[in-house]
Length: 256
Image (cartoon, rainbow, N blue to C red):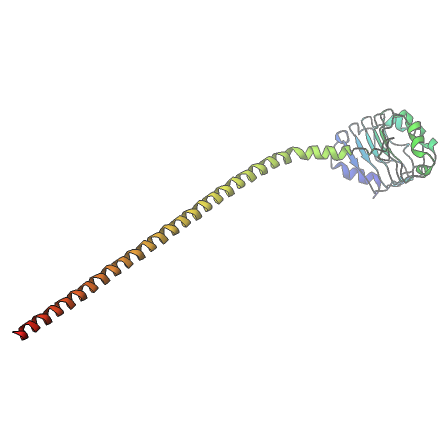
């Protein structure tokens, strides 16, 4: 898709003056120059033109608010002088994967006083001896080169941090709600455990009481049986005594 058509599609019927970010990666520049952009994009802060066949930035219009420019994987060789005039507030420039061979090709970037991050990896210039030291010396305003500072500390991902901040608000609320729900679930679980434990303890006590009642009933039955047995034995003894008395009376009558 041609670059002009792609930009028209990305506008989505918006006014160019209202566009803050524009991404036209992987379309095609017909002559290796920037096409379809104009000075109407006065609010544009982020512009990405990755792999579109650019060989020059000479026709980049004036974009006074542009702070981030992605033009990696093109065939740009130099001619970066215009950037200081068209994008004076540029802070981030990604030129990785282009045809930049000499340090002199990036020397015009000294005029970009706000430039803090520069990417040149996969460019031939990055294979030069003392490449890192030489670039930081040439461009003293730089803080990060290819994602690292001069002390080899990795650059923070400011874009990711911004996304995280945007997401943190609603998620923070959801997290609090989740915590409240978790607390309620925990309280509910604890309550259920207490009820269950109380129920089990009550059941255990009832079982013990039932067992005690059963034991008492057995003891009472045994006592009744013993009493009944005692009555029978007493009756038998009484019968035997009467029998003996009767026999003795018979003997007395015979003797008379």
